[in-house]
Image (tube, rainbow, N blue to C red; front, side, top):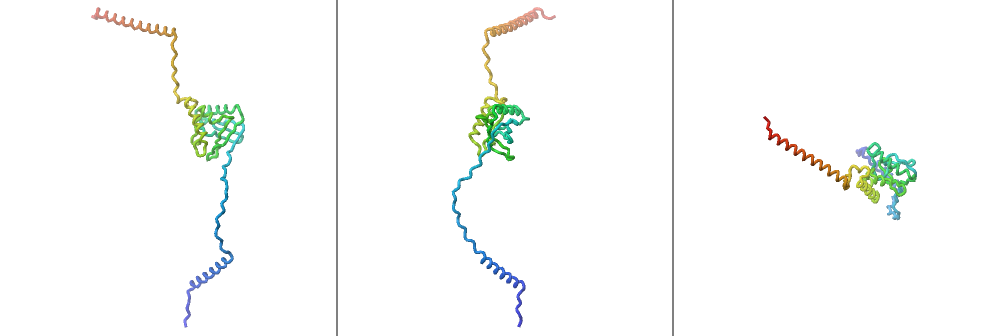
Amino acid sequence: MSRIRFPSKLVFGLLSGAIAATASAALRADNPPVPPAMPATPVEMAPLAPPPPQEFEGPAIALDGGTLQLGEERLTLFGVDIPAMAASGGIKARLALEALLADDNKLHCVVAARDLQLHKFAVCRRGDVDLSEAMLLAGLGTVDRYATRAKGADPQLADRYDQAEAEARRAGNGLWAEFVKPVAETPPEPTVLQRLCLFLKEWQAGIGSLAGFFLVGALLLVTRRHPAR
């Protein structure tokens, strides 16, 4: 009687399956199934408040027409574009900013924006005077509308800066002087003496013209009486 032979691979597969089933059953016995997730109870929470803006106060010096050094902080005036020191009007702008800082050393600045290099742009006030607005009124800069019209910017501040620039443009202040035509002045009425002098000058010019006319007529008359031979 011949024996039935099973392929070795089939035997090995059956043994592996049996071992895996036994291990899985043991694991299920040691680790019961995880219960289904229950919905979380809603919690009433207030929305996170944005961090307070950075504020700085104290004496400051003007590095150029639009940059201040206040203690260890370097701040750029927000909302105004000032010419660089090497450009036309740059030195004049710095002198004007120094004059705004000269009378009072208590400057209050609030950071309004930062750029990708983390430079701080601040609204700086000396008392009731907004330095950016004062520079715009003097015509020493133009409104940086990329900053004032950005998302989150104060619309009232943007309107004030626009009005300051418009006022400087109408008055021909600073940078706007070359774009404003001077108003022609009406000449004053001439005095009696000026009128008399003008009359004598015109009379002399008339006499001279009349004399020249008679001279030309006399020459023509002489020429006709004595034709050239």
